[in-house]
Image 1 (spheres, rainbow, N blue to C red):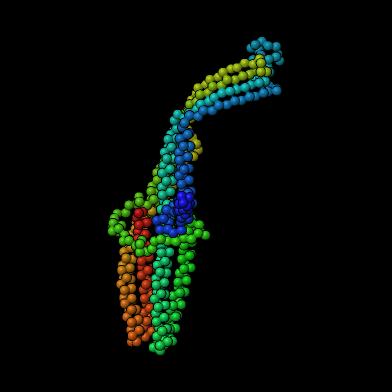
Image 2 (image 1 turned 135 degrees about the vertical axis):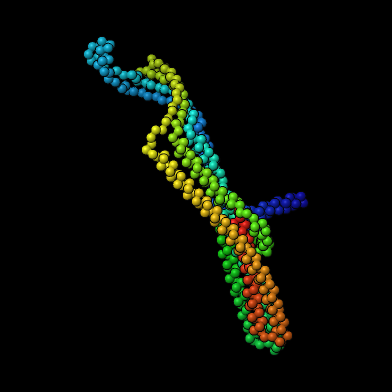
Length: 442
C-alpha cells in the first residue's frame, strides 16, 4: 500500500513539473514574462552588459602595474665581429692591422630577467575609465529599452487575438440562438404557418455566420503564430490565452490624462542622455591627449656569457627608470577628431530634442485617442442595447404573426453589426489605454 501511495506521489510531482515546463496557456503578464526570458534580442542585450563589465576591467588594467619575466638563450657558431677605427690601435700602440677587428660577444649567451612597469599619469586614462563605466550604464539602459520594446511588442501581438476571441464567442452565441430560431421556424413552416422563404433566409444567415466563424478561427491561428514568434515560443506547440478584453479593460488612471510628462520614464530618452554624456567624455579625451604622460619601470637581469658552459661568467644588471612623453605636434589629428566629436555631440543634442518633442506628441495624441475611444465605447453600448431591443421586438412580432421575416432578418443583421462595433470599440479603448501607458513610459 505504501508503494502505491509513493508511486502516486511521484506521478503527481512529475505531472506538475511537466505542466510547468510545458505551459500552453498564458495571461498577458505571463506571455510578457516568457518573452523577456526567452527572446534572443534580450539575451544579446544581457551579453552586451557582460561585455561592458569586461571593458571596464580592460580599461582599468591599463593603469595597473605590469610584470614580465623573460628567458633568452643565444648561441653563435660564428660570433659577430666589429671593426675598430685606426685611432683605437694607435692609442694602444698596436702594430698596423692588429686589434682592429674584435668581438664583444662569446659563443653562448643566456639571459634571465624580470621587468616591472606602471603608468604613473595619463590624462586620457582617467577619462577612459569614466567612459567605460558610463558605457555600462548606457548598455544597461539599452537593455531596459529593449525589454520595454519586447513588452510592447507582446502586448501588440496579444491584444488582436483577444478581439478575435471575443468575436468568436459572440458568433457562437448568435449561431446557437439562430439555430434555435431556425428550428422553431421550421416547425411553424411544417404546421403551415410560415413560408419556405422564411426558413431559407434563416438557413442562409446561419450559413453565413458559420463561414464567418471559420474565417475568424483561421485568422486567430495566424495571429497566435505572430504572438509565438514575438515570445520566441515553439511554433509547433499549442498556445492559448487566459485573458480577455473585459478583464484587461480597466479605466486608465485619471493622472495619466493630466500629469506632467516625465521624459525620463522613457528608456530611450535616458539612453539619449547617457549618449550625450559619452560624447562629452569623447571630447574630453581628445583634449587630454595634449597632456604629457609619465611611466615608470624597473628591470633586473642575470646574464651568462662564455664560449662553453664551464668557463663563462655571470653578470647581473639592475635598472630603474622613468619615461615622460610630451605630445608636440601630431599633424592636427587630435584637433580634427575633437571637431568631429563636437559635431556629433551637437547632432545627438538635436536628436534628443526631437525625441522629447516626439514623446510629447505621442502623449498628447494618445490622451485624445483614449478619451475618444471611451466615448465611442459608451455610445456603442447604448446602440447595442437598442439593437437587442429592436431584435427582440421584431422576433416576438414575427412569432405572433404580426411581423415579417424580412424585419427579423434586418434587425438580426443590425444586431450582429452592432455587436461587432461594440467589440471593436472595446478593443480600440484597450489599445488606446495601452498606447497611453506606453507613451508615458508606465
